Figure 1 (tube, rainbow over the protein chains, first blue to last red):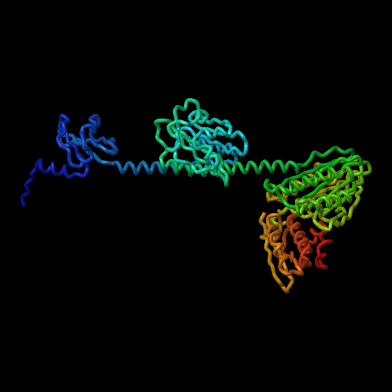
Figure 2: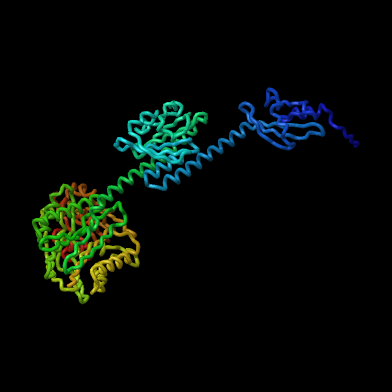
Length: 511
Length: 110
């Protein structure tokens, strides 16, 4: 079959261009518009030439905005003399891309916020992280106002281009910022558009910030109580806080508030523990003629579990009284009880020095205590200076060990009832007097030593036999060295395991 | 340190008698269970309370305090509390604290 090739007629070409989905604008060699297809007419109702950037090279693509539409334009050589401009409406496509980018940015922001906020249990550092995180994506300036906590003045931290600033305001000044007093009281945030930015007082913003265009005040929700408030400011002329941003700020504020309130609680608790544990700290030991005294008190590792081991060496006109004890339980109650026992002993010692009598008195005092179950184990050792005799009373506590100068170790034959335990008030005590010859050493210890779990299995108690064996190797050593060595051997046994309070006190007659 | 779980078993071998079988580590972290249970144990027309400590691996001062509290509660009820199972470790502990002179211990162990 013969085939004759015809060039398509102008009408056919025109029909093809007219039917194309993309907008097509055709210009002649002089740049005059010779054809605008239907799609292009629909995209650009008015004068199309304003969109045509004649400075572009053929093959180049660019985007331009027309009203609320976004158009992508490509310039091409069409035929020999004609120039074509292809137009595509990408409004929805770029809106979707923008939304995705914004969403990614918000997610990234929250991930970063979570990472930085969880890094500290310090109130100031958490507040600083909150202010710094909020500057940039969320606002031009961000201020964290910390909860007043019953004081007249309250602290703030502010982050902006001017850097990090800190200060204090009288709590009453919170009223000057729209919505701040409410946010500090924990009321839910109001939309930014309800807050008049022109009411913002000067102290709210860094110097030279310029007029405020938008203000957003959000409470930082804590554990039941507000953990302060976050004030965000954007400059006049900039974008306002849209719904997505306000939602993001609320989510961010919830995380920041949780972090700040956890830090506040932690600091309060650790301050309380430090005060209480201060009462349990080992006292400096006095110098007693003819004797060496050495002590070691290792508190349990978990600071929240303050234990109740304590020791004291109390001077009296008739010679020093050495005490070592352990109160039952842990935590603040144990610390308070230990403090009570130590102070009671000091007071009682003004009237009575006999260990046995002191035990009965302490027992009665504990039984009349308002706090139920205030049990204490105690060793009292009254040293008679000069002749080396020590009168001992032991109540509910492991009996002291005696290391003779020749390396023989004996357990002192003294025992007695736990104090504060038996409601009738009747305690039985078997006291003892030991004669400390020069070179002999008396060791007082708490059950944290013998009940230290460790060894090869990690489940074995150190026990009194191991302690006595260890002590036997210490003959001839000074008291300080004996305590250090026993402490070291016991720590080796624990091998890093969790331990209870451990107390050791050695009395050695040097001559 | 691994801790042996603390368990309390309650049985009524005969009317008026309750037997508590304790096992595991009886310390600061676990003694609250028995302390909480103590008043409930007393309200059952109780006349004898038997406590078996054979399975107890460790008692600290809090555990000891809980046992004393239980003993006081039984005395007040009134009911007789006696220990029916001991280990050498617990016998030693009761000796050190002189609670062996207060508590009713099995004659073989004391």
